[in-house]
Image (tube, rainbow over all chains, first blue to last red; front, side, top):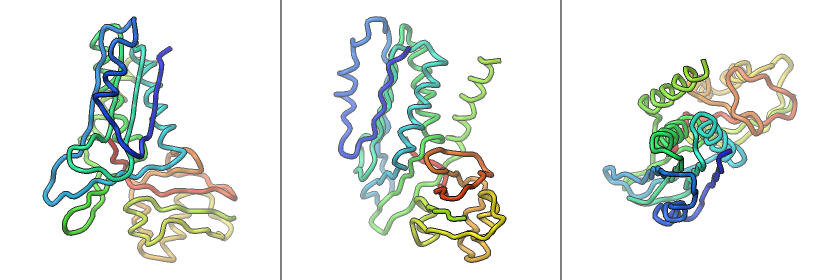
Length: 157
Length: 83
């Protein structure tokens, strides 16, 4: 059974420290895959604000990691997600998986970040010089989640 | 039936408030009937009927239509945009 760690962080997220803490930790793991999402520049950007739904968001992330652990042979899954206010370049999310072989680790990370985008209750708001606007969901994220759901359904069939 | 509704993120801005306690008339059995009731009271509630709107009923993300019971808290959520 994979070791799963889920955290919602209000202050800071340090991907280098997170990766360092995982490197070499699982004796069975020949591969450690990580993904870091960070605040991207856009015209007039002053800050990015992340809102979540206490009591529900963490549980949704847990479910995503559990599904990844059922589908791929991974020793460990980690999802750490920031909420609150962030500035340009600041990390938003850290996703990692350790597995015996690289393909399992890479696919598990791909699954977790893609599913998180559409299935975990977070909402982004961009603050700019001229005001603030909520970030709209994009079809590409929906398509990525659909890809994995079909992938998992075909495995189960 | 007593119900607490929450409006999250962009829907909170649209509705002009984060939460409301409602005392509903008989016959409102699910989320879609509730949206119809809310739309009759204020045009801004039309945004709640958009198919992309997700529901959190008490502590769980649920599909639409969601059956409602006395004392429930129902949150209307825009599509999720984390990561």
